[in-house]
Amino acid sequence: MRQGGLIGICLLVAMGWMAGCATMGGPEIEVDENSREPGSWVDFNGKPHDLIGKGIQVGDRLPSVPLTDASRTTPVVLSKEKGMVLFLSIVPSIDTGVCDAQTHYLGEEGDELPVSVKRITISRDTPYAQQRFAREAGLGDIQYLSDYKAGDFGKAMGLLVEDLMLLARAVVIADKEGVVRYIQVVPEMAHLPDMEAAFKMARKLAHR
Image (cartoon, rainbow, N blue to C red; front, side, top):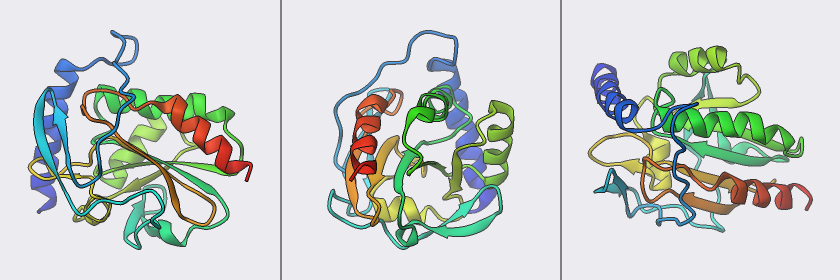
């Protein structure tokens, strides 16, 4: 997909979400405690959307697919990261109300996590959009990784929404050896993940 086409899709979807979803300071956003299987489907405002890819499972290693670090615009391969618990907060677009809330929760409430937990936000926004968000939100202690080029990370994880070509909302946590120990794929994309349950797992893995 050309970058212009991706940006167009993102803008259309973002406009719909901003109109229909809560923003910071607005109505409370519903939290989903359930999960769908990667590679299955998710709902967006009640309409099902298939997910591309076989789908990663607990016990698998993170895929060896490069993402782009927003701060340096250099490639990052998460499967090579060792020695830290990786808390992956995966969002469709940071310029939407629910994604904004999810990232603020990770950045603010996540400050209480052990120092051995690396907090990462992943989306298909361009690195420059992620840089701007981090600067304007004051959330520079999160690493921002972009899957904007071809969505290869999303495909490898089973988290790429087929017709929207955006990432499904999810939380994935890998232990210090890069093995996935926790997955929540939020069934309804307009809802938040259960961040407190994910924080609990991250703390547990950090103390192993």
